[in-house]
Image (cartoon, rainbow over all chains, first blue to last red; front, side, top):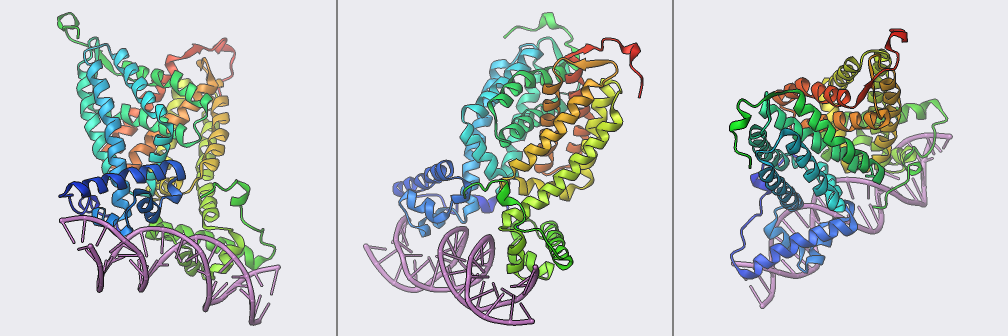
Length: 220
Length: 220
DNA sequence: ACCTGAACACCGTTCAAGT
DNA sequence: ACCTGAACACCGTTCAAGT
């Protein structure tokens, strides 16, 4: 399978009429439904088209191939998660490093465990199709936001905020994924919830310098 | 796709004659070759059989389905990596917590980056087929060894060695996977190599109590 | 401008027939 | 005891024909 470029993964054409917009959305939601109820293994073009109430041919008018459809689903899912994280980052701006760290980890764990089925389905898609483009771009978007957030910390700032933001994402994202993919036992999630905040807090504290003039900063 | 039980994934029959042992190995190595040269997308039963110099029918005599073959490959790959980690754990036994932590992270990073193609191919298989059974079992095997290793630390021991071992695996494994899957840029691997040891060391130091009678322990 | 669905190439899997 | 490969069901994708 030659890796298609990002451009090739976009919908073939933009809907110009109302009814085709409806069609595109129907296909999109049908795909998510099939994914969640039947699993990745049973997600076939025929089944999605049937569920959406259109023919396969119509599907191919908007998504040049199955991968493009999966790509669209992932993009929406990952995008909304990153959006939530950006909002959390906004709320945490200007707080202490420990609070920032705890807040990020809590937000991430909430997002991933709230919709366990969705998260696991996404992980399933993530490797079956080569979606590293989406995840990479979204990761970078979040990384920039976290870098600013870390710089805003009231009490201390990591020596290398860019590296720290990168690592936070890799560690939070990776650890949670590792656990969820391996069955996501309640007991394991509990350990994660207790220990992951400590991992991130200790890391950030270990490589930070006290902020220059803490008293001069306006508390948020 | 009903999730097959672990038993169903094992080779259908054990080879009883010399030539069939050769056949099984030929299929196994052919599959790895196809995987590495052509990618997961082009790994078809026909291609593997052709490369191995047998017919498809013969393949199905030893592997009840394609998934069983993938399962065998993953098991061997993951198993050898865990074996290497166990050996590293052995060498680190009785050292300080910081040395243990650094040693584990270095060993893990070496293993994963030495054979980049193999690692990435494995990640690719990992989600396409449901191999959580293998990875879970191997993770637990390593977790037990790491728990003992942490207890052996000369200077300090984590308050909850079991949780700490679990987290080390989740964090190391997840962070490295996250980075490798997203393209594994040299610069990103460099950050990982510099920062991941700090993540783990800070975490372990933050939740440890000084060993009871450090002077009484025999240095390894 | 959009939709249909039979047709095509290819894949995983089986099994009657061979040695 | 082991191997072969045509045959089958199913999948992703296309395109001539419709409205």
